[in-house]
Image (tube, rainbow, N blue to C red; front, side, top):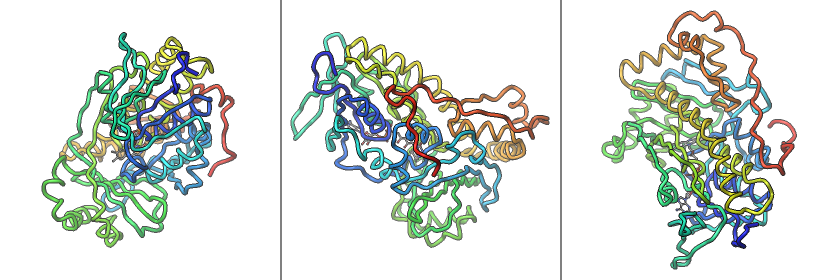
Length: 445
Ligand SMILES: Cc1cc2nc3c(=O)[nH]c(=O)nc-3n(C[C@H](O)[C@H](O)[C@H](O)COP(=O)(O)OP(=O)(O)OC[C@H]3O[C@@H](n4cnc5c(N)ncnc54)[C@H](O)[C@@H]3O)c2cc1C
């Protein structure tokens, strides 16, 4: 429904969580959508395994949660910071959250992509093996589509709106000239995929050691993911040649994992180095063009917020575009302004939340470790702080720490620390009109 008769209403660069969720929502609204994906097929990747309750709510309203469950996603019920021997130091239990989505879902990244791509509406086309390499621009600077290489030849694809969902290193964002602030963390995660790991707690464990954090959690099929923090560049330069020896060192510093000694060593060949970034974009849109997902914002993965942010973006953008009419330039740009205004403040909060948790759990200096012990002890004893943190992580809403909470965090006595707050689930922002009232699946998993 473009005013100018373009073949597509919306062209999306990238078939990750942001691109696929957006395609689904727009397709359900009857828009003609083309998704370009540079890979030839969905590939397994060590990133994005944990979906927070907020993402589950949105995906359920979009009719996508059933596909994730059917494909075997696991429930996880708590995020626990532990000592190296596995002793819990601070626990965020999701069971007390308001609303129906009081758990996380855990799945392999490729399985999440496949579930989101299942049963896409007939107005959505996904073209694999096609890289968006530039933007098609009108003389006035308006983005009018993308430039691609197809069958070895350059081609142009016109659309009323172009959305860059092409991830952290977004080429389309660069082509659009949108400003980016990027900081690389001083550590990276070395990811491993373990097999034959039955009977793990349905929890995300953050094992804190003097060398940093080790994240460990179950995946479907008796598998587990292990992310080991390592100083940036160190693994590549020193450990690559002797991964089993390096893993011996990990097991020596994390006794809780020794029961999985055999599985950990068997996973040596799966090692992947994952660099970690914090990125904020000063502007998410320009005429005819928007960023969504990691292309717009990238946060430390420790709080598992990246995919939720991507899903949130898709929901807000589809809602903003949903007046059901022609996508004239004015209609598109009005929608983009509403989208950016709706999403940026919340995403800024998520950015600070993720960075704060990363600072708490990944610091390796003596001061950082002492502070971590202290803060985890305070949080573990203070019901109110724990509840606020869990609520914010889950994305049920935004509750900011008050001055009194900050003082309690610093160790001052807190008379309210034993009180349970009555926190309600914040209503989801209005979604696309065709989903109002939201479609929800019957009952919890
Ligand atoms: C180690 C690690 C662990 C993580 N764990 C979690 C977690 O547990 N939970 C969570 O919520 N988040 C997690 N994240 C973050 C999460 O993976 C991202 O936030 C999320 O995948 C972003 O989705 P996206 O769709 O924006 O981008 P991506 O998933 O990066 O998808 C971008 C897509 O665009 C394609 N593409 C790129 N360039 C082009 C082009 N020029 N033309 C066409 N296609 C292109 C890519 O091939 C890709 O398919 C983790 C990240 C890391 C690094």
